[in-house]
Image (cartoon, rainbow, N blue to C red; front, side, top):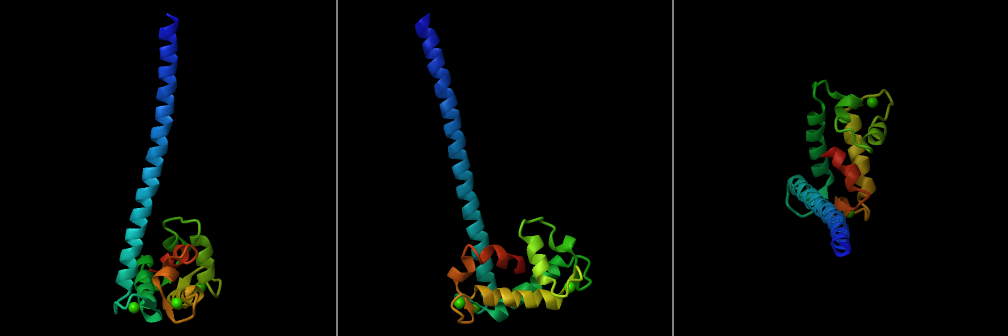
Length: 151
Ligand SMILES: [Ca+2]
Ligand SMILES: [Ca+2]
Ligand SMILES: [Ca+2]
């Protein structure tokens, strides 16, 4: 009787341990796949932007991507972005970036403000000031979360 009880207890404990172990494994797998997907999407964006295929992004290429992106944000096609157009995905950084873009602080971002901000961001993250964003500069943990608003 005591043995059966013990076995049950140990069995239960093992089940609980196994359960939490599986949870951890699942979480790790999910993180892993999220990373892979993020890298794939980022990778293809870099390739798309690098129109002359020299393995780096120059300002013209970046501005070209930003220009296309602006049109995607501008749902009502009036040449200006309201916060709700820009912040449709409700990202934590996007409010701050919107303020950054809105140079004249009228609560809207027009094409010029958007492209000027893209240009300033490009310069900021061109760490070695060679006029190009290398893969390393583009993917750096500081640059990518901000740059992605522009392409
Ligand atoms: Ca290029
Ligand atoms: Ca503005
Ligand atoms: Ca550079």
